[in-house]
Length: 205
Image (cartoon, rainbow, N blue to C red; front, side, top):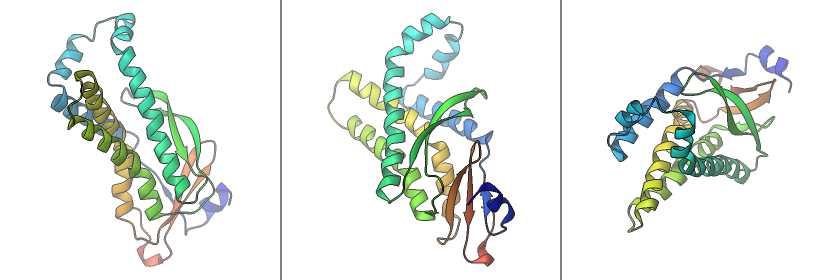
């Protein structure tokens, strides 16, 4: 189906997310979990905000490498979860508003032009949060070195905060009937539509 068919068919409703609210949820989660696992980190960031770019790169370079790998694994889990359910997902990069309200390149995984059930969507969305956080939490329970514990905490904080959009979508999908089906369309940007077989239940969540 092309995009015009979805726009013209009242049986399909476009699924949208609040772009401004998600970065706020990410920031709040970062601050709360950051202070829980790294007490005083918020004050440290404020006090060091005046450092030049070179100094910041020296400080964050090792951490940035770990987070890049974590992001790749996060998206890879989305991919594998979709693939395991019989779909044909693909990787991409989009410009998306982030914490700084500027558009930055963000990797994503999407399945295009295929009907996806509500349950399949939920499983694919929540998988990285469950898998990565479970591994990080497990590492915290083991007698590992200080460096490993530090990076396990970092991964736990950043992965949880970075999963806020996935979690938001899961909560919304849980409010829809189980009969809901979804389809993603590439219209220059990824647009998602959903349909519910029972017309009496068709409503924007």
